[in-house]
Length: 349
Image (cartoon, rainbow, N blue to C red; front, side):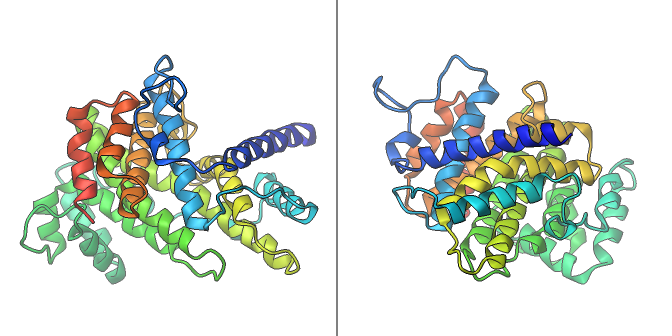
């Protein structure tokens, strides 16, 4: 067991160092658009579509995290003290008995929410009762329902009953799940406070994009597409918290933004998978977070995160709207499906 854990940690750290090497040169805007010459970076077209989407998603996400942590354009070589922090974070999060303070608890109402649409005849009443038990949850759900990402009418949605009529039970279930997890992402740290805010905004956008993608490709999975985005976002947040905790234990070591990016990229997906299992989510959701190529939700996850990150980079004037849409098209995503999603995300600014 110890040997296997050591190998796993070594692999994760190797992946982290790969990310660090990539960060030595900032990703130019051109790298986010379709390549037209052999010398430009381009997602290979010979690999499966989900793999191409995942690769593009990883590159764009790396760029977004770099902005969130204000990492320098030129990656810094890690000093021994930083390497010790890196190793401590990996060991803490990969331990057979990890410190529970790093891992968020499953929301109390989440199991009820998962069962809320088992019977479509009672789904409306069940959802209404779940939301009514928590005034804060009610407020957050209505705020989301009236946001530019979801609002389809100039008439505001002022009650849960109205939200059900306008949005439908399936869409509202996703909003409830999103509202349940939002408090976890509220920044309480003084170091790199921009990261959890950026992560949450990407998560909101990605959840909406994944839902809209699922409606077009596998409508029965629209809620699961939203939920897998939310679960996938928890891993990077946990890594962020664990890394800052390790730095707090060693105040003589200045937090390194490049290391934060590398750790988040290397360990985030693995931690998300661990949380999904601990929360006893469905095997399909776990498989999607593992990026299984045979699970349909994997594509919804990659597409949602890719479009969420691209739209957020567009709002920060890192790329143009045309460049973002071209990137999505270049990995093989049909314009007829992606264009309406992109328009929704970019008009929500």
